[in-house]
Structures are given as structure tokens and as C-alpha cells.
Length: 308
Ligand code: ASP
Image (cartoon, rainbow, N blue to C red; front, side, top):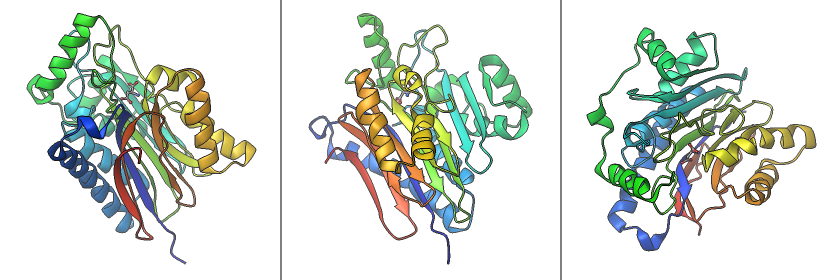
């Protein structure tokens, strides 16, 4: 029997309300999600690996200025961009991550190069950029990353003296993908510009293996979005895997414990996308909305933004 395959993606969670969205903007978000979903799914359909599928989906989301990753990354305190990304292969639990990288067009590609060619799991800042030069990774200049509305968000955050989520209305915009391929392998990837007005080299949960990103063929693949500090403290992605592995809980029950109990108790707002080795997909969030989508080989799929 042919093994089923599936992919899920997210474009961030937070205070995303119908009342503050125009139809035109909603359509743009949906198109951004659909383009990434379809490209990742096409790889799986052709028998490609879940690793390539998540890399491709995240690359497309990084290239879309609507999302807080790659091109659309938020500004840090000094008006620059420092991006974090990770990728993990559930087949052998190989992982690669980068933190605080500047001028890298697609941080997910650099994370994958770290995994495959550096002999390390995580590189940060200048060192990661030097490594990128040895790997034919594409760089982009400041103009590529400039976005007037994000710049405005930084000015507001500076005036208020706060480190804020993607928008002043607390919208997270990180992107991520999880997939199961026809060979039964799971993979996960997450990429982000972090939080507006972040400083002192702040790194969120996205590139931390086990916090914002995790994949293990025996259990699940997870990509998170939300207030990173809390996701690090709750070790969200690995904890879900552990609940499945050691307590034999289902994907849904394990995710619910983290998203609706552990995170809530410490004030952790956000959500995640999850897939298990059988191809079940679950996309819970405790915020008002989360840009999310999935597509399965059984023909089911959806693209959603709000709670209902
Ligand atoms: N988790 C990301 C971070 O804290 C932010 C987000 O998901 O939007 O860096």
C-alpha cells in the first residue's frame, strides 16, 4: 500500500481578527500561504523528501513580505534585521539552525547548509554569515528587507519603549512547515525575524531545537509561533514529542497539554503546527488567530486564519 503524505504550514499567530482585516489583504495572505503549501506539496507528490518540502515551503514564505521572516522580517532596536531559522530531519534527528543572521535572503537554506555541511547544529551572527559565504548562500542588501509598515512598527515600539510582537496589535508572523513524505519521514522547519525592537542579540524559540522546532520519525514534527521566551521555557516542541513517546499520548492530546495548559499557565501566547508519523495534522493556538494551512494525499486540506 502506498504510504500517505502531507504538509502543514503556518505564517504566525496572534491578535488576527476579521474586524481588522480587509478582504484584499486577507486574499494576499491566503495566496502567500497557498503558494508555499502547493510548492511543498508538489515535492511530496513527486516522491521528494519531507526535508525538501519544508525547506521549499519556508523559502516561499520567507520571500513573501507579508510574513515576519526573510524579506518581511521585523526591525530590531537599531533598525536592522537579525533572523533566526531551523530545520530538522526526523529520519536521523539531524538538525541545523542559525541565529541573529543579517543579510541572508533565505535563512532556512543556511540552516539546512549548517545541518548538512558544517558538522555543527547551530551557528550565530558573523560566524554564520562567514559560513554562508562558503556555501553559495544568497545575500541581500538592506533595501531588500526594507518595509515601510515594519519600520513604522519599530518607531512606535521605540516611542513606547517596548519589545513588541510582529505588530502593535500583538501579531506574530514567524513562518514554519512540517511534513510527512511517502517514505514515512518527518521534517520540520521554522524561520523568523523575531520581535520588533529586540536588542542585545535576543534569540527566540524558532532556532532552538526542541523549543520552536523539532522532528522525530518515532513521534511527530512541530513548528511553533508565539512569544518565543515562553516557548523556550516550556520546551514546547520536544515536550510534545516526549508526551507521545513516553506517555503514549496522541498528537492532539499532547499538543493540547502544551498549548492550552502549560503555555497558558506561564502566559505564553501563540500556537503551532504538528504532524505525526501517521500523517495526522493538528494546528492548535491560544491566540485569536494563526495563519495556517495543510494539504494531505487523501485529498483533504484547508487554508485558515481565524479561530472559527
Ligand atoms: N516565536 C518568534 C520569536 O519569539 C516570534 C513569532 O512567532 O512571531 O522570535
